[in-house]
Length: 457
Ligand code: TYD
Ligand code: MG
Image 1: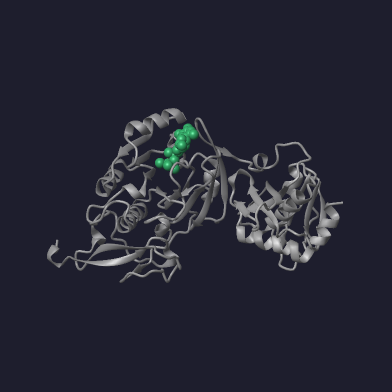
Image 2: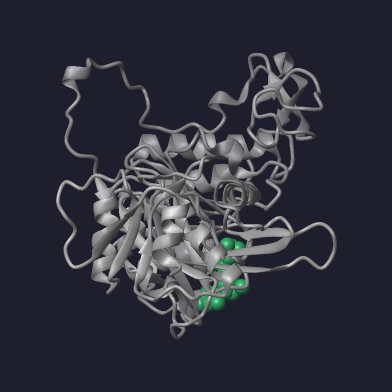
């Protein structure tokens, strides 16, 4: 090795987006975040680490696109219908999947459940966080068939790559990217350069060997230093675990997927024996209380391709001190403020002196604009202490002039409502249905005043 030519220099990485800069800056020009620069020594010159962990089976040649056989991607089922669906029908061979989430949310549990549920797959589970004994105890707790699962407690990438080649498993799980290190990179594990190099090495291994790899990464709420965010452009698929730590429900979302659609979502429940998939989230997210409670409304929402219903809760009360409080869990508080302003200016509801609290059922984080209508209804229902009948649901976006706008795939939302026993769905007047939804009455409203006339009689 031409060690003499090896030089190091300092570069600065943004820990939020992973962009690299030659000097420190207070604000990252790429993503606009403040105070995210971290300094790293990188090796330059002829001994750059590109070939540090070599993967045999390379030496490929460029091919004509027409010579490439375009069979369907080869996919493996991971033993969970929900995870398979999220991935677009199973994990693609040779792909690198990043599973991110806060500590304690269930990443290790979910990934250990895969080999236990799919003993047909020879799986190598590399753990850098827990000892082999701890993993064994967890596996005992989860149950299932552990006969084809290899546990390997190691953090050094060269050894890990060697074992992958030796064992030739069907699936590799690496827990977690923050604990692994490449010996040729001179910084501690968990640093930006190590994380990037570890991921790049695993990507190379996955592509060369055709073995799919699941890489686990911790994210903290603040998007802390060297978060897996910087990996998002390296890996093929990014799955993110979300959920209130206190609640039992967890949501796994696909944020990026080179082999399927994004914004898909799967719901799991953490039980005493691992994560149980909730195939039909509506059943858990809609009211379990009697009719007659004010401040709740059911929204018909869509995640990726699947419609489901969930409850929006609101509490409106007189502000004790001068400034009213606005708080929203699982919903953008700025959007809430906008909706309250629309209610005040366009429909004359005096809410500026009121505290408004908003909560999405099950600790979900909602970005679907169709939820606006249910938010508005829940707020008004609480404000007037007027309960909304339990068999009514809502799907509409609210515009700045108080108009109610149509939402995508209204038909599917309505049929999901009908399937779950809802009798009426409120949508925008401008909603177009190709086919009239069966078994549910569609109430079309043009704006907030029309909604109020129809609902609060
Ligand atoms: P874990 O998978 O270790 O989280 P991560 O790898 O994302 O850090 O999950 C840890 C939490 O899950 C812990 O608080 C205990 C809980 N848990 C259960 O409730 N039931 C179980 O069967 C298991 C294995 C864990
Ligand atoms: Mg873990």
